[in-house]
Length: 430
Image (cartoon, rainbow, N blue to C red; front, side, top):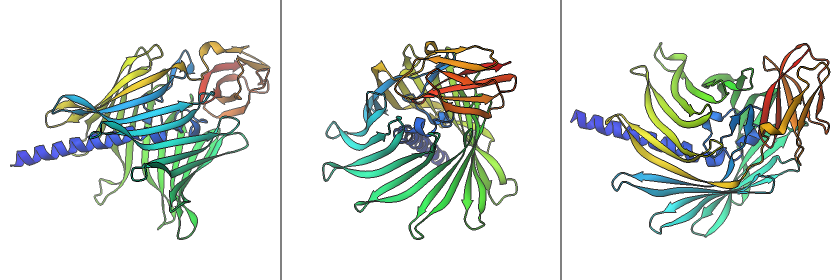
C-alpha cells in the first residue's frame, strides 16, 4: 500500500512538472512578443527564458537574426496510442520593416478537429520602429468575435531608451490600470521597479524591484528581485537568478534561488536553491538541448525535471523542431510531453551581419569610424570601458564617426544596435 501511494505521489509530481513547464513554454507567446523591445538597452536579460522561435545566434562577433517564424504548431504526446495530437498553434505576421504586425494563438478542438481562436495581439510602432502599444484580444466563443482583453503601453526617454511600461485590463467596457514598470539606467538597465494599481486608493503601490549586475561584455550575470513589505516599509529579498556564459557569450547555465524566511534556524534568512537550467551546444554556438532541474532539499542535490531538445537546424543554427520531455522518477526514464514544429519564412529578418561593418582605425588616437550600410532606422552606438561602464551613447551620424580622442589610453567595447540586432567588438585608444 505504501509503495502504491509513493508511486502515485511520484506520478502526480511528474505530471505537475509537465503542466508547469508547458505553461512556461506557451507564455513565450506573451513575454517574447516584446522582449527585444523591453530589453533593447541591455544584453538579453531574459535570455534564459527565450524559446527557439526568438533566439538570436552570434557568429563571428555579430548577432545574426534568425529567419522569421511564421507559425509554430505544438503537439502533445498520447502514450496510449503512441501518437502526437495538436495542442496549440501560434501564427505571426510581419510588416515591411520586419516588425511583428500580428500574432495569433489558437487551441486545437479535438471534437471538431479544427483550430479555435484563443488570443491575438496587435502592436503599434512609432516612426523609429519602437513599440508604442500592444493590444491583446481574447476570442469569445459565445459571441464568435474578438474582444479587448489587455493593453501594454511603452514610454521612452530623450535617448530613446524604454523608461516605462503600463499594463491595462479591459473590464466592463473600459480599460483599467493593472501594473506598470519603471526602468532605471546607469549606462544599462540597472533596476526595474514594478507597481500594482490600488483601485481603493486610486494610486500605484510599489510591488517588486529587480536589480541587474553585468559582466564586462554586457551579459547579465546576476538578477536579484526584492519585494516591498508594506508592513515594515522596506524592501526584502524575494528571488535571485545567477547566469554563467560560454566564451562565445551564449548562456551556459542559470540557477534560480528564493529567499527563505522559514521557522527553522537553518532555513531562516538565507538563499535556497530552487531551479537550474543547463544548455548544451554543438558547433560552438548551436543550441541542441536545455535541461531543467529542481532542487531536492531532502537529499541536497539537483533532481531532473524536464528537458527540451532542438532538431533539424538550418544553416544559421536555427532549429525547425523541438521536443519537451519530462523526467519520471518512478521509472527513472524520460517521457515524451510536447513537440513544436516551426515554419520559417524564406525571407530573413532584418539584421546586421559581420560583413556589413568595418571598424577603423584600430587603434585610434582621434576618431573611430563605424563603416556600416545605412538603413531607414537609426543606429545607436554605445561605448563601454572594460569594467562595463558606459562612456558614450549616441545615434551614429551619416559619416559613421565617433570622437574618442579625449578618452584615456585603454581598451574599449563598442555595441551598435538597430531593430534589436546588435554588433559588438573591441577597439583601443592610444
